[in-house]
Length: 321
Length: 107
Image (tube, rainbow over all chains, first blue to last red; front, side):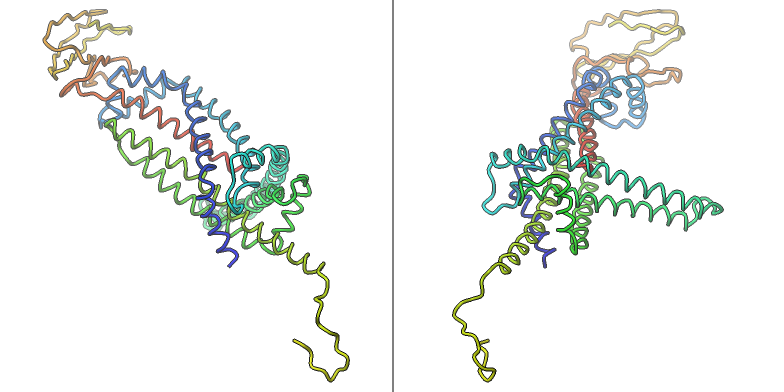
């Protein structure tokens, strides 16, 4: 029941957090365009002023493939420029994710919604905390997954030394290694998200204590949290696969079709932000329920005995229950 | 329109000129010429010109410099190279965007 509540909270978060989805999508698009800029003059030179653009756009069965190969070879420096710019843009977007998570944690899923100022205040308040949480996540997850991969590789090398290439047990071992790494990633990712969410209730909590708190919140609820993680991973992965496949297989030759094609690309780029915000909504809902239950339990422990019920004078009296 | 052989190998080649109304004119460029200037007076303006338009020369290693598109028109002159620039610039940005979002797995 709690899981279903968290799931519906995730879908509700997409509605209430539309502005965050738009912000994340817009940031991706702006950084992507900036990273792609070095290729612009080369594209204009190779495709705008020659017949190659016509061949490629119309997918000419005789000439398109060689034109693409010529473009990749002749304009390799520009492609290298895009590749380098994309790596820097990825770093910037990572930093942006760390910052935006602060705003999400403090604003998303609050009853009555949130204002942009509340979101920005959350970003500012949690920026340093989220940076420390990110470093801890990177170290812990990197070390654990690295250790797991190294150990399983050593064991499988020993165990399948004499197995023929492509043998089923060796393949099974590889699949187990990948699944184990995914499980470790899921565990550390959840701890990371819940450590950042700890600031929702305790704005002064440090990174270490936030991780301890996250472990306490997730204790006894790992299955539920991992199910939520898996649900959003599979849903997001499926939507993204369908979107990428649609974009790749749809042809666009006329100006109107190219415009629609670009809109489709924007829609595909909006999938990841929407699913990320939905996952945050689910996690925060789960966090809120646990905190509410803990607060209620603490309040009932502190509450004085109810007045008005007289003590039993003899055992012959019937209790008032 | 000037056609030039920028390589070291003297060889004959076909040249094709296409006008805005779709008219196609084919000429042969002599093997010994380093460059050839073709002057054609015609009712429609030149849309594009290309050397070896059917790509029969298997030794050619860069096809990106064997044609020039000046404008579009009807029939054979109906080219869409400008659209290709917009489409593939957007495609590049889109692929970069997918790469950037893959990096989100860390945060």
